[in-house]
Length: 245
Length: 299
Image 1 (cartoon, chains in turn green, blue):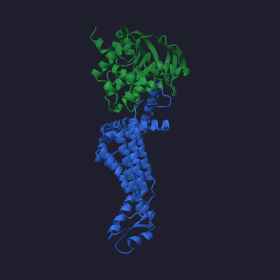
Image 2 (image 1 turned 90 degrees about the vertical axis):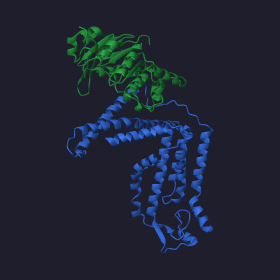
Image 3 (image 1 turned 30 degrees about the horizontal axis):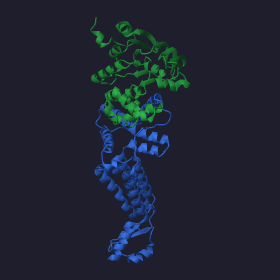
Image 4 (image 1 turned 180 degrees about the vertical axis):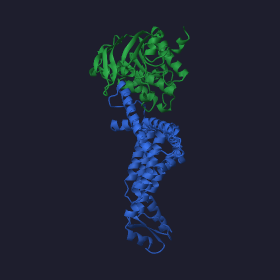
Protein backbone atom coordinates (compact mmCIF):
# COMPACT_ATOMS: atom_id res chain seq x y z
CA UNK A 1 0.00 0.00 0.00
CA UNK A 2 1.42 3.36 -0.96
CA UNK A 3 -0.51 5.70 1.33
CA UNK A 4 -1.84 4.48 4.64
CA UNK A 5 -4.75 6.86 4.66
CA UNK A 6 -7.87 6.23 6.72
CA UNK A 7 -10.81 8.14 5.39
CA UNK A 8 -14.46 8.22 6.46
CA UNK A 9 -17.17 10.01 4.47
CA UNK A 10 -20.53 10.75 6.09
CA UNK A 11 -20.37 7.60 8.12
CA UNK A 12 -23.70 6.77 9.66
CA UNK A 13 -24.59 3.74 11.73
CA UNK A 14 -27.81 2.80 13.49
CA UNK A 15 -27.82 -0.18 15.84
CA UNK A 16 -30.55 -2.82 15.28
CA UNK A 17 -32.42 -1.48 18.34
CA UNK A 18 -32.62 1.98 16.74
CA UNK A 19 -29.82 3.65 18.75
CA UNK A 20 -27.70 5.96 16.66
CA UNK A 21 -24.12 4.70 16.86
CA UNK A 22 -22.43 7.08 14.45
CA UNK A 23 -23.88 10.27 13.05
CA UNK A 24 -22.51 11.65 9.76
CA UNK A 25 -18.85 11.24 10.63
CA UNK A 26 -16.16 12.41 8.21
CA UNK A 27 -12.41 12.58 8.71
CA UNK A 28 -9.15 11.83 6.99
CA UNK A 29 -6.12 10.42 8.80
CA UNK A 30 -2.80 10.56 6.96
CA UNK A 31 0.17 8.23 6.91
CA UNK A 32 2.08 8.14 10.21
CA UNK A 33 -0.41 10.28 12.10
CA UNK A 34 -1.30 9.47 15.70
CA UNK A 35 -4.91 10.28 16.41
CA UNK A 36 -6.74 10.00 19.72
CA UNK A 37 -10.45 9.32 19.71
CA UNK A 38 -11.89 10.72 22.91
CA UNK A 39 -15.38 11.15 24.28
CA UNK A 40 -17.63 10.08 27.12
CA UNK A 41 -18.94 6.53 27.51
CA UNK A 42 -21.29 5.71 24.68
CA UNK A 43 -19.96 8.53 22.49
CA UNK A 44 -19.30 6.06 19.65
CA UNK A 45 -15.54 5.45 19.95
CA UNK A 46 -15.69 1.66 19.93
CA UNK A 47 -18.41 1.67 17.25
CA UNK A 48 -16.17 3.75 15.03
CA UNK A 49 -13.19 1.44 15.60
CA UNK A 50 -15.29 -1.60 14.72
CA UNK A 51 -16.19 0.11 11.45
CA UNK A 52 -12.53 0.72 10.65
CA UNK A 53 -11.75 -2.99 10.79
CA UNK A 54 -14.87 -4.02 8.91
CA UNK A 55 -16.60 -5.69 11.85
CA UNK A 56 -19.58 -3.39 11.49
CA UNK A 57 -20.96 -2.20 8.15
CA UNK A 58 -22.08 1.42 8.01
CA UNK A 59 -25.76 2.08 7.43
CA UNK A 60 -24.70 4.96 5.19
CA UNK A 61 -21.39 6.43 4.06
CA UNK A 62 -17.99 5.06 3.01
CA UNK A 63 -14.67 4.15 4.55
CA UNK A 64 -11.38 3.96 2.68
CA UNK A 65 -8.37 2.27 4.18
CA UNK A 66 -5.30 3.00 2.10
CA UNK A 67 -6.04 2.20 -1.51
CA UNK A 68 -9.14 0.15 -0.80
CA UNK A 69 -12.73 1.10 -0.12
CA UNK A 70 -13.84 -1.02 2.81
CA UNK A 71 -16.23 -3.66 1.52
CA UNK A 72 -16.62 -7.42 1.67
CA UNK A 73 -14.36 -7.97 -1.30
CA UNK A 74 -11.46 -6.03 0.18
CA UNK A 75 -11.97 -7.11 3.76
CA UNK A 76 -9.00 -9.48 3.88
CA UNK A 77 -6.65 -6.94 2.33
CA UNK A 78 -7.87 -4.24 4.73
CA UNK A 79 -7.44 -6.51 7.73
CA UNK A 80 -3.97 -7.36 6.53
CA UNK A 81 -3.04 -3.69 6.71
CA UNK A 82 -4.82 -2.82 9.96
CA UNK A 83 -4.17 -4.26 13.37
CA UNK A 84 -6.66 -3.90 16.18
CA UNK A 85 -5.81 -4.21 19.87
CA UNK A 86 -9.02 -4.90 21.79
CA UNK A 87 -9.89 -3.44 25.15
CA UNK A 88 -9.86 -6.76 26.99
CA UNK A 89 -6.70 -8.76 26.21
CA UNK A 90 -8.55 -11.95 27.18
CA UNK A 91 -10.64 -11.49 24.04
CA UNK A 92 -7.55 -11.23 21.94
CA UNK A 93 -5.44 -14.01 23.39
CA UNK A 94 -7.34 -17.16 22.57
CA UNK A 95 -4.59 -19.64 21.78
CA UNK A 96 -3.03 -22.10 24.24
CA UNK A 97 0.33 -20.34 24.45
CA UNK A 98 1.67 -16.84 23.85
CA UNK A 99 3.76 -18.11 20.95
CA UNK A 100 0.74 -19.69 19.23
CA UNK A 101 -1.22 -16.49 19.72
CA UNK A 102 1.39 -14.28 18.09
CA UNK A 103 1.86 -16.85 15.32
CA UNK A 104 -1.90 -17.08 14.64
CA UNK A 105 -2.15 -14.00 12.44
CA UNK A 106 1.13 -14.75 10.66
CA UNK A 107 -0.01 -18.26 9.68
CA UNK A 108 -3.38 -16.98 8.48
CA UNK A 109 -1.73 -14.30 6.37
CA UNK A 110 0.41 -16.94 4.70
CA UNK A 111 3.85 -16.27 6.21
CA UNK A 112 6.11 -19.28 5.44
CA UNK A 113 6.56 -21.66 8.36
CA UNK A 114 10.32 -21.20 8.41
CA UNK A 115 9.97 -17.47 9.13
CA UNK A 116 7.24 -17.66 11.74
CA UNK A 117 9.38 -18.35 14.79
CA UNK A 118 11.70 -15.51 13.89
CA UNK A 119 8.89 -13.01 13.42
CA UNK A 120 7.05 -14.12 16.56
CA UNK A 121 10.15 -13.67 18.70
CA UNK A 122 10.86 -10.31 17.07
CA UNK A 123 7.36 -9.05 17.91
CA UNK A 124 7.68 -10.30 21.49
CA UNK A 125 11.06 -8.61 21.82
CA UNK A 126 9.64 -5.30 20.61
CA UNK A 127 7.07 -5.33 23.42
CA UNK A 128 9.71 -6.61 25.85
CA UNK A 129 8.28 -10.02 26.74
CA UNK A 130 10.22 -12.69 24.78
CA UNK A 131 10.49 -14.75 27.99
CA UNK A 132 6.73 -15.32 28.02
CA UNK A 133 6.56 -17.15 24.70
CA UNK A 134 5.80 -20.57 26.16
CA UNK A 135 3.39 -19.38 28.85
CA UNK A 136 -0.38 -19.76 28.75
CA UNK A 137 -2.22 -16.44 28.42
CA UNK A 138 -4.39 -17.12 31.46
CA UNK A 139 -1.32 -17.18 33.67
CA UNK A 140 -0.11 -13.68 32.70
CA UNK A 141 -0.61 -10.45 34.62
CA UNK A 142 -2.74 -7.64 33.16
CA UNK A 143 0.29 -5.71 31.89
CA UNK A 144 1.86 -8.80 30.36
CA UNK A 145 -1.41 -9.70 28.65
CA UNK A 146 -1.62 -6.22 27.15
CA UNK A 147 1.97 -6.42 25.90
CA UNK A 148 1.32 -9.79 24.30
CA UNK A 149 -1.94 -8.53 22.76
CA UNK A 150 0.03 -5.73 21.13
CA UNK A 151 2.65 -8.23 19.96
CA UNK A 152 -0.04 -10.37 18.30
CA UNK A 153 -0.99 -7.35 16.23
CA UNK A 154 2.41 -5.86 15.40
CA UNK A 155 3.75 -9.28 14.40
CA UNK A 156 1.71 -9.05 11.21
CA UNK A 157 3.31 -5.66 10.51
CA UNK A 158 0.13 -3.67 9.95
CA UNK A 159 0.32 -0.20 8.44
CA UNK A 160 -2.38 1.10 10.73
CA UNK A 161 -2.59 0.34 14.43
CA UNK A 162 -6.02 0.66 16.03
CA UNK A 163 -6.33 0.46 19.80
CA UNK A 164 -9.31 0.45 22.11
CA UNK A 165 -8.50 1.77 25.59
CA UNK A 166 -4.94 0.42 25.64
CA UNK A 167 -4.07 1.89 29.04
CA UNK A 168 -7.16 0.70 30.92
CA UNK A 169 -6.57 -1.65 33.87
CA UNK A 170 -2.82 -1.09 33.82
CA UNK A 171 -0.71 -0.16 36.82
CA UNK A 172 1.26 3.11 36.48
CA UNK A 173 4.53 1.38 35.58
CA UNK A 174 2.90 -0.82 32.91
CA UNK A 175 1.06 2.23 31.58
CA UNK A 176 4.34 4.13 31.30
CA UNK A 177 5.99 1.23 29.49
CA UNK A 178 3.04 1.11 27.10
CA UNK A 179 3.26 4.84 26.38
CA UNK A 180 7.01 4.62 25.76
CA UNK A 181 6.42 1.64 23.48
CA UNK A 182 3.70 3.39 21.49
CA UNK A 183 5.93 6.43 21.06
CA UNK A 184 8.45 4.26 19.23
CA UNK A 185 5.91 3.00 16.69
CA UNK A 186 5.90 4.76 13.37
CA UNK A 187 2.59 3.23 12.31
CA UNK A 188 -0.51 5.28 11.73
CA UNK A 189 -2.15 5.06 15.14
CA UNK A 190 -5.80 5.47 16.05
CA UNK A 191 -6.30 5.22 19.79
CA UNK A 192 -9.68 5.35 21.51
CA UNK A 193 -9.10 6.33 25.10
CA UNK A 194 -10.29 8.04 28.26
CA UNK A 195 -6.68 8.52 29.33
CA UNK A 196 -6.20 12.07 28.10
CA UNK A 197 -2.70 12.30 29.56
CA UNK A 198 -1.66 9.40 27.40
CA UNK A 199 -3.38 10.96 24.39
CA UNK A 200 -1.46 14.16 25.07
CA UNK A 201 1.86 12.31 25.05
CA UNK A 202 1.31 10.08 22.04
CA UNK A 203 -1.16 11.78 19.73
CA UNK A 204 -0.64 15.09 18.03
CA UNK A 205 -4.22 15.07 16.77
CA UNK A 206 -7.47 14.38 18.62
CA UNK A 207 -11.00 13.74 17.43
CA UNK A 208 -13.66 14.43 20.05
CA UNK A 209 -16.84 12.40 19.72
CA UNK A 210 -20.17 13.11 21.34
CA UNK A 211 -23.42 11.20 20.84
CA UNK A 212 -22.05 9.52 17.73
CA UNK A 213 -20.89 12.69 16.01
CA UNK A 214 -17.58 14.58 15.78
CA UNK A 215 -17.70 17.81 17.76
CA UNK A 216 -14.05 18.72 17.42
CA UNK A 217 -11.06 17.61 15.38
CA UNK A 218 -7.68 19.24 15.76
CA UNK A 219 -4.42 19.63 17.61
CA UNK A 220 -4.50 17.69 20.88
CA UNK A 221 -2.97 20.42 23.04
CA UNK A 222 -5.30 23.09 21.72
CA UNK A 223 -8.40 20.97 22.16
CA UNK A 224 -7.45 19.97 25.69
CA UNK A 225 -7.08 23.64 26.66
CA UNK A 226 -10.72 24.20 25.64
CA UNK A 227 -12.44 23.50 28.94
CA UNK A 228 -15.91 24.24 27.56
CA UNK A 229 -15.46 21.60 24.87
CA UNK A 230 -14.15 19.06 27.35
CA UNK A 231 -17.05 19.68 29.71
CA UNK A 232 -19.54 19.35 26.87
CA UNK A 233 -18.14 15.99 25.87
CA UNK A 234 -17.99 14.57 29.38
CA UNK A 235 -14.22 14.93 29.71
CA UNK A 236 -11.80 16.66 32.02
CA UNK A 237 -8.54 18.47 31.42
CA UNK A 238 -5.58 16.03 31.53
CA UNK A 239 -3.90 15.99 34.95
CA UNK A 240 -0.59 17.15 33.49
CA UNK A 241 -2.31 20.28 32.15
CA UNK A 242 -4.32 21.05 35.26
CA UNK A 243 -1.32 22.67 36.98
CA UNK A 244 -0.62 24.88 33.97
CA UNK A 245 -2.62 28.09 34.06
CA UNK B 1 -16.64 -18.89 45.51
CA UNK B 2 -13.75 -20.41 47.40
CA UNK B 3 -14.47 -23.75 45.77
CA UNK B 4 -14.59 -22.24 42.31
CA UNK B 5 -11.24 -20.52 42.79
CA UNK B 6 -9.69 -23.61 44.35
CA UNK B 7 -10.78 -25.74 41.43
CA UNK B 8 -9.28 -23.17 39.10
CA UNK B 9 -5.90 -23.50 40.79
CA UNK B 10 -6.31 -27.25 40.76
CA UNK B 11 -6.64 -27.21 36.97
CA UNK B 12 -3.62 -24.89 36.74
CA UNK B 13 -1.69 -27.60 38.52
CA UNK B 14 -2.36 -30.04 35.70
CA UNK B 15 -0.79 -27.54 33.30
CA UNK B 16 2.19 -27.25 35.61
CA UNK B 17 2.59 -31.03 35.68
CA UNK B 18 2.66 -31.08 31.88
CA UNK B 19 5.75 -28.84 31.97
CA UNK B 20 7.86 -31.38 33.91
CA UNK B 21 10.96 -32.76 32.31
CA UNK B 22 10.85 -36.55 32.40
CA UNK B 23 11.47 -38.68 29.31
CA UNK B 24 7.74 -39.44 29.16
CA UNK B 25 7.02 -35.69 28.97
CA UNK B 26 9.56 -35.27 26.19
CA UNK B 27 7.96 -37.91 23.97
CA UNK B 28 6.13 -36.70 20.88
CA UNK B 29 2.48 -36.03 21.82
CA UNK B 30 1.32 -38.21 18.93
CA UNK B 31 2.96 -41.28 20.47
CA UNK B 32 1.22 -40.71 23.79
CA UNK B 33 -2.15 -39.98 22.17
CA UNK B 34 -1.93 -43.12 20.04
CA UNK B 35 -0.94 -45.31 22.97
CA UNK B 36 -3.73 -43.88 25.12
CA UNK B 37 -6.30 -44.41 22.35
CA UNK B 38 -5.15 -48.00 21.90
CA UNK B 39 -5.29 -48.58 25.65
CA UNK B 40 -8.79 -47.12 25.96
CA UNK B 41 -9.98 -49.00 22.85
CA UNK B 42 -8.77 -52.34 24.16
CA UNK B 43 -10.06 -51.78 27.69
CA UNK B 44 -13.59 -51.01 26.48
CA UNK B 45 -13.55 -53.88 23.97
CA UNK B 46 -14.14 -56.59 26.60
CA UNK B 47 -17.49 -58.21 27.36
CA UNK B 48 -19.60 -56.74 30.12
CA UNK B 49 -18.85 -59.41 32.75
CA UNK B 50 -15.07 -59.33 32.40
CA UNK B 51 -13.15 -58.41 35.49
CA UNK B 52 -10.08 -60.54 35.99
CA UNK B 53 -8.77 -59.98 32.47
CA UNK B 54 -8.88 -56.20 33.10
CA UNK B 55 -6.63 -56.37 36.15
CA UNK B 56 -3.28 -56.60 34.29
CA UNK B 57 -4.14 -53.37 32.45
CA UNK B 58 -3.54 -51.51 35.69
CA UNK B 59 0.11 -51.96 34.92
CA UNK B 60 -0.09 -49.13 32.35
CA UNK B 61 -1.25 -46.31 34.68
CA UNK B 62 1.02 -47.53 37.47
CA UNK B 63 4.12 -47.62 35.28
CA UNK B 64 3.30 -44.34 33.53
CA UNK B 65 2.72 -42.55 36.85
CA UNK B 66 6.05 -43.84 38.09
CA UNK B 67 7.98 -42.98 34.95
CA UNK B 68 6.43 -39.53 34.63
CA UNK B 69 6.77 -38.84 38.34
CA UNK B 70 3.14 -37.78 38.70
CA UNK B 71 1.50 -37.13 42.10
CA UNK B 72 -0.75 -40.16 42.53
CA UNK B 73 -2.95 -38.65 45.26
CA UNK B 74 -3.83 -35.72 43.00
CA UNK B 75 -4.80 -38.04 40.14
CA UNK B 76 -6.88 -40.25 42.45
CA UNK B 77 -8.70 -37.15 43.74
CA UNK B 78 -9.54 -36.16 40.17
CA UNK B 79 -10.80 -39.68 39.47
CA UNK B 80 -12.96 -39.71 42.58
CA UNK B 81 -14.47 -36.42 41.43
CA UNK B 82 -15.65 -38.11 38.23
CA UNK B 83 -16.57 -41.40 39.89
CA UNK B 84 -20.31 -40.62 40.39
CA UNK B 85 -20.86 -40.60 36.62
CA UNK B 86 -19.66 -44.19 36.24
CA UNK B 87 -21.32 -45.20 39.52
CA UNK B 88 -24.77 -44.14 38.37
CA UNK B 89 -24.31 -45.76 34.99
CA UNK B 90 -23.65 -49.14 36.60
CA UNK B 91 -25.48 -49.11 39.92
CA UNK B 92 -28.80 -50.39 38.54
CA UNK B 93 -27.23 -53.46 36.91
CA UNK B 94 -27.33 -55.58 40.11
CA UNK B 95 -31.11 -55.03 40.35
CA UNK B 96 -31.80 -55.91 36.73
CA UNK B 97 -29.34 -58.70 36.00
CA UNK B 98 -29.68 -61.26 38.82
CA UNK B 99 -28.32 -64.42 37.14
CA UNK B 100 -25.51 -66.01 39.10
CA UNK B 101 -22.43 -66.30 36.96
CA UNK B 102 -19.55 -66.18 39.39
CA UNK B 103 -18.93 -68.41 42.37
CA UNK B 104 -16.14 -68.01 44.84
CA UNK B 105 -15.28 -71.04 46.88
CA UNK B 106 -14.03 -69.84 50.21
CA UNK B 107 -12.00 -72.98 50.70
CA UNK B 108 -10.05 -72.46 47.50
CA UNK B 109 -10.30 -68.69 47.51
CA UNK B 110 -10.17 -68.65 43.77
CA UNK B 111 -11.49 -65.66 41.88
CA UNK B 112 -12.66 -67.04 38.56
CA UNK B 113 -13.99 -65.12 35.65
CA UNK B 114 -15.97 -67.73 33.79
CA UNK B 115 -18.46 -65.91 31.68
CA UNK B 116 -16.38 -65.92 28.57
CA UNK B 117 -13.76 -68.59 28.62
CA UNK B 118 -15.05 -71.59 30.52
CA UNK B 119 -18.38 -73.34 30.73
CA UNK B 120 -19.76 -72.87 34.27
CA UNK B 121 -20.64 -76.52 35.01
CA UNK B 122 -17.44 -77.83 33.50
CA UNK B 123 -15.52 -75.29 35.50
CA UNK B 124 -17.12 -76.33 38.76
CA UNK B 125 -16.34 -79.91 37.90
CA UNK B 126 -12.68 -79.19 37.15
CA UNK B 127 -12.13 -77.07 40.19
CA UNK B 128 -14.15 -79.25 42.50
CA UNK B 129 -16.48 -76.40 43.33
CA UNK B 130 -19.92 -77.26 44.50
CA UNK B 131 -22.94 -75.08 44.82
CA UNK B 132 -23.29 -75.54 48.55
CA UNK B 133 -22.27 -73.73 51.68
CA UNK B 134 -18.91 -72.09 51.54
CA UNK B 135 -19.56 -70.78 48.06
CA UNK B 136 -20.23 -67.10 47.43
CA UNK B 137 -22.53 -66.49 44.49
CA UNK B 138 -22.23 -63.25 42.57
CA UNK B 139 -24.84 -62.10 40.08
CA UNK B 140 -24.07 -60.82 36.58
CA UNK B 141 -25.32 -57.37 37.61
CA UNK B 142 -22.65 -56.96 40.27
CA UNK B 143 -19.99 -58.27 37.91
CA UNK B 144 -20.93 -55.81 35.19
CA UNK B 145 -21.08 -53.01 37.76
CA UNK B 146 -17.55 -53.73 38.97
CA UNK B 147 -16.44 -54.17 35.39
CA UNK B 148 -17.75 -50.66 34.59
CA UNK B 149 -15.99 -49.20 37.61
CA UNK B 150 -12.67 -50.86 36.72
CA UNK B 151 -12.93 -49.77 33.12
CA UNK B 152 -13.80 -46.26 34.25
CA UNK B 153 -10.74 -46.15 36.52
CA UNK B 154 -8.46 -47.44 33.78
CA UNK B 155 -9.68 -45.16 31.00
CA UNK B 156 -9.96 -42.02 33.11
CA UNK B 157 -6.54 -42.55 34.66
CA UNK B 158 -5.09 -43.03 31.16
CA UNK B 159 -6.69 -39.76 30.02
CA UNK B 160 -5.48 -37.88 33.12
CA UNK B 161 -1.97 -39.25 32.61
CA UNK B 162 -2.06 -38.17 28.97
CA UNK B 163 -3.03 -34.59 29.87
CA UNK B 164 -0.58 -34.39 32.80
CA UNK B 165 2.34 -35.58 30.71
CA UNK B 166 1.51 -33.85 27.44
CA UNK B 167 -0.56 -30.72 28.10
CA UNK B 168 -3.96 -30.05 26.61
CA UNK B 169 -2.70 -27.92 23.73
CA UNK B 170 -0.20 -30.55 22.61
CA UNK B 171 -2.93 -33.20 22.70
CA UNK B 172 -5.03 -30.94 20.43
CA UNK B 173 -2.04 -30.47 18.15
CA UNK B 174 -1.50 -34.23 17.95
CA UNK B 175 -5.18 -34.72 17.09
CA UNK B 176 -4.79 -32.08 14.40
CA UNK B 177 -1.86 -34.00 12.94
CA UNK B 178 -4.09 -37.09 12.90
CA UNK B 179 -6.51 -35.12 10.72
CA UNK B 180 -9.28 -34.91 13.29
CA UNK B 181 -11.84 -32.41 11.90
CA UNK B 182 -10.87 -28.82 12.62
CA UNK B 183 -14.15 -27.68 14.28
CA UNK B 184 -13.74 -30.42 16.86
CA UNK B 185 -10.21 -29.28 17.74
CA UNK B 186 -11.16 -25.60 17.79
CA UNK B 187 -13.99 -26.41 20.22
CA UNK B 188 -11.64 -28.37 22.49
CA UNK B 189 -9.02 -25.64 22.49
CA UNK B 190 -11.51 -22.89 23.21
CA UNK B 191 -13.15 -24.93 25.92
CA UNK B 192 -9.83 -25.26 27.67
CA UNK B 193 -8.74 -21.65 27.13
CA UNK B 194 -12.00 -20.01 28.18
CA UNK B 195 -12.85 -22.36 31.01
CA UNK B 196 -10.51 -20.24 33.13
CA UNK B 197 -12.07 -16.97 32.00
CA UNK B 198 -15.59 -18.32 32.58
CA UNK B 199 -14.77 -19.61 36.06
CA UNK B 200 -13.20 -16.25 36.83
CA UNK B 201 -16.29 -14.40 35.61
CA UNK B 202 -18.63 -16.71 37.51
CA UNK B 203 -16.61 -16.35 40.70
CA UNK B 204 -16.75 -12.54 40.38
CA UNK B 205 -20.55 -12.72 40.10
CA UNK B 206 -20.82 -15.05 43.09
CA UNK B 207 -18.54 -12.74 45.07
CA UNK B 208 -20.63 -9.71 44.15
CA UNK B 209 -23.76 -11.53 45.29
CA UNK B 210 -22.28 -12.73 48.56
CA UNK B 211 -21.03 -9.22 49.42
CA UNK B 212 -24.57 -7.92 49.14
CA UNK B 213 -26.19 -10.79 51.01
CA UNK B 214 -26.63 -9.72 54.58
CA UNK B 215 -28.93 -12.38 56.00
CA UNK B 216 -27.56 -15.27 58.00
CA UNK B 217 -28.74 -17.83 55.49
CA UNK B 218 -26.23 -17.14 52.76
CA UNK B 219 -27.21 -20.06 50.53
CA UNK B 220 -28.15 -19.05 47.04
CA UNK B 221 -31.86 -19.20 46.33
CA UNK B 222 -33.02 -20.86 43.15
CA UNK B 223 -34.85 -17.68 42.12
CA UNK B 224 -31.51 -15.86 42.21
CA UNK B 225 -29.51 -18.66 40.68
CA UNK B 226 -31.56 -18.67 37.48
CA UNK B 227 -31.00 -15.01 36.50
CA UNK B 228 -27.32 -15.31 37.44
CA UNK B 229 -26.83 -18.27 35.12
CA UNK B 230 -28.71 -16.32 32.44
CA UNK B 231 -26.46 -13.33 33.01
CA UNK B 232 -23.40 -15.56 32.73
CA UNK B 233 -24.70 -16.95 29.44
CA UNK B 234 -25.24 -13.44 28.05
CA UNK B 235 -21.75 -12.38 29.11
CA UNK B 236 -20.36 -15.54 27.53
CA UNK B 237 -22.15 -14.82 24.26
CA UNK B 238 -20.83 -11.25 24.29
CA UNK B 239 -17.33 -12.48 24.89
CA UNK B 240 -17.64 -15.12 22.20
CA UNK B 241 -18.61 -12.40 19.76
CA UNK B 242 -15.62 -10.25 20.75
CA UNK B 243 -13.24 -13.20 20.45
CA UNK B 244 -14.62 -13.98 17.03
CA UNK B 245 -14.03 -10.39 15.98
CA UNK B 246 -10.46 -10.55 17.26
CA UNK B 247 -9.93 -13.76 15.31
CA UNK B 248 -11.40 -12.34 12.12
CA UNK B 249 -9.13 -9.30 12.45
CA UNK B 250 -6.16 -11.63 12.28
CA UNK B 251 -7.38 -13.48 9.22
CA UNK B 252 -9.29 -16.40 10.77
CA UNK B 253 -10.94 -18.52 8.08
CA UNK B 254 -12.35 -21.42 10.10
CA UNK B 255 -9.08 -23.26 10.57
CA UNK B 256 -6.61 -22.90 13.38
CA UNK B 257 -3.09 -23.93 12.61
CA UNK B 258 -0.25 -24.14 15.03
CA UNK B 259 3.43 -24.26 14.31
CA UNK B 260 5.29 -26.59 16.63
CA UNK B 261 8.37 -28.64 16.12
CA UNK B 262 7.54 -32.31 16.55
CA UNK B 263 9.86 -35.22 16.08
CA UNK B 264 8.64 -38.76 15.81
CA UNK B 265 11.74 -40.90 16.24
CA UNK B 266 12.86 -44.30 17.39
CA UNK B 267 12.00 -43.52 21.02
CA UNK B 268 8.35 -42.91 20.06
CA UNK B 269 8.16 -46.00 17.85
CA UNK B 270 9.55 -48.18 20.66
CA UNK B 271 7.14 -46.61 23.14
CA UNK B 272 4.11 -47.36 20.98
CA UNK B 273 5.33 -50.81 19.91
CA UNK B 274 6.20 -51.83 23.47
CA UNK B 275 2.89 -50.84 24.96
CA UNK B 276 0.91 -52.19 21.97
CA UNK B 277 2.57 -55.57 22.44
CA UNK B 278 1.73 -55.56 26.16
CA UNK B 279 -1.90 -54.51 25.54
CA UNK B 280 -2.44 -57.13 22.83
CA UNK B 281 -0.99 -59.83 25.06
CA UNK B 282 -3.29 -58.75 27.90
CA UNK B 283 -6.20 -58.78 25.45
CA UNK B 284 -5.50 -62.24 24.01
CA UNK B 285 -4.53 -64.10 27.17
CA UNK B 286 -6.42 -63.95 30.41
CA UNK B 287 -3.30 -63.88 32.53
CA UNK B 288 -4.96 -63.92 36.00
CA UNK B 289 -7.19 -66.84 34.99
CA UNK B 290 -4.32 -68.85 33.52
CA UNK B 291 -2.20 -68.04 36.52
CA UNK B 292 -5.03 -69.16 38.81
CA UNK B 293 -5.52 -72.44 36.96
CA UNK B 294 -1.80 -73.07 37.02
CA UNK B 295 -1.57 -72.41 40.74
CA UNK B 296 -4.66 -74.54 41.46
CA UNK B 297 -3.15 -77.44 39.54
CA UNK B 298 0.13 -77.07 41.37
CA UNK B 299 -1.48 -77.21 44.79
